[in-house]
Length: 440
Image 1 (tube, helix red, strand yellow):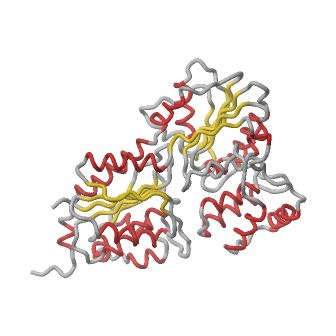
Image 2 (tube, one colour):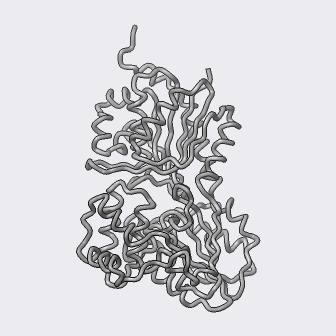
Image 3 (cartoon, one colour):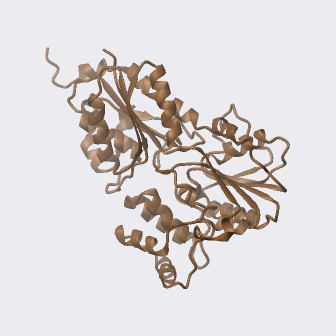
């Protein structure tokens, strides 16, 4: 009998293919974990008093690995991670002994984020000639270190941050604004530590790995200007608070000083080292896929754009694969929120791919996940799609097209048991996408 619903194909779907995609994703994430990449820091020259500050999803793991790498050093300082991260620290790793760990708000900063930034700035100011300040940066640092510039409030930063996150602006545009409203970002932490020696150890969560953008570049000269900030505000028609508008006006008029620029002498003693990036994770994913018997025909880095558009493109590329072939993507998409649903960029990408896969009979899977284990305001890292996803959803009374329109990929994929759940990974190098076609 002819199966008009497509359910027979779903029931016989290749669960092994899905598990293979998950294993490739896990290999990518493991390759950019702190115990792996911090091994390369053994040659650091630490003089005088060694102070440590840090912020981001990998900060606690980096602090622990730093102490293990230099057991003879008695570090003092503190790092901040998102709420809930201390209790989620991997059981097979030892937490930091002397470097204090606190938690703050992410992606929306809170009072704890403000206090953490103030503590970091104070630690930098306490550095003297001959001292070393080690700065541990990773994804999430921009929100976790949120210290308003004089004349602004935390409420101002929260409001602008929320507007930016919902606008569809990319991370470069978001950080240009953040840096100019902050007392710590855009080279200002580095300026506060002068004349100490500054060593920044970074994990990149931005496309292109621009060191002035990672964590909003607290120790790096800032090439963006007040004019760039105004351009972002105008481009996305952001209805910023009156206090922020007034502050921006002062900046444009030259009344409010700009962030330290590349010509600044105050950042000459600052060294920056990139320890892990999306490229590292992609190389590990490629190696894992090959070891599992799949031929990788393409590895695309620096992927960006609207998540649902990228999902459709990735789906078409996956459908074009030959038997036993694999294609990989890395980068970070954005979601322009128009509905009232729940989800994240990877989930929306996967749902869009599922819609593109509809009615196709090729045995493929597309998985997309955030390497930090968190995709939007959800407990999922991402999700996956197969040609049977849409038919299965409709058989359960779930409308994938409506879910996509409402930015509600989370509830749709959860109903189908197609969410990628990893929990916090204590690292972050953006997202990894995996397209596989089964062997014949």
